[in-house]
Length: 76
Image (cartoon, rainbow, N blue to C red):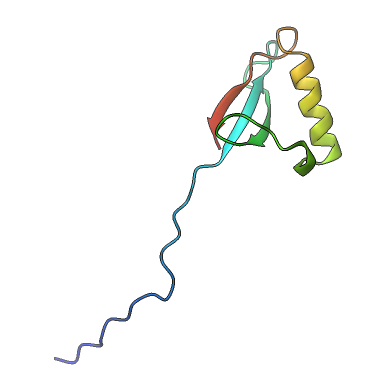
């Protein structure tokens, strides 16, 4: 039997960590939401967002209860 020897991987397999996002669901347009990357505690790195995304995030936070629901932390 000609079996080739098994080789070990030089690097361990990558363990994927879940990524999270905070979502602000629209109160008036079902199925629509604004979502932004965050950590598992819901903290958003404003410096990592584009200017448009940062403005949208600040808008969503300012309109909670009027145009958007309370933020929800979700696995992305």
